[in-house]
Length: 176
Image (tube, rainbow, N blue to C red):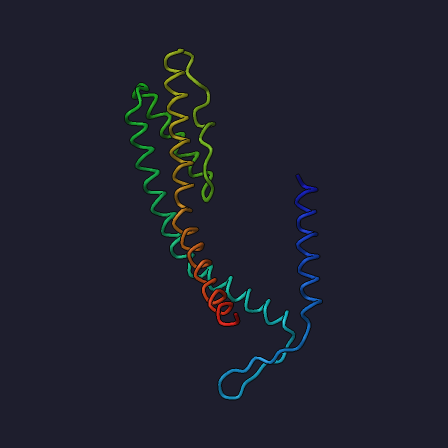
């Protein structure tokens, strides 16, 4: 896998290098008030590409962070409901809730793996099955919340990317 990754990186680098070599002619970018900037086409394209990436990230970041905060609250609510609705004995629920809270605090900023909070499993077979089912349901809720938090932000980023293609399509129609 590592070989494939580096091979793809090398191929991309060689493609971009070839693009830079083929497009090294000078261009003059004229601004308002008589200002102008003379540079190679590749440098100008690279600057505008980098500026577009930065502007796009700045546009999506507030939405992304608010989505994460909202999904965190929803995951806590869903996790609480799963614990309260589970058939696990109340005293065991309290112990597990304290362990889970400790585990969540330890993994701040990451999608937590809560499996270790359930160790050791109860010796009683029925209680063990209930605890394993509870663990799996809670981990599923955490994973679902983390996955769903990214959906609106990436959807907006994809929409911005598609909208950026409109000038290209219009320019091609004018040339034809």
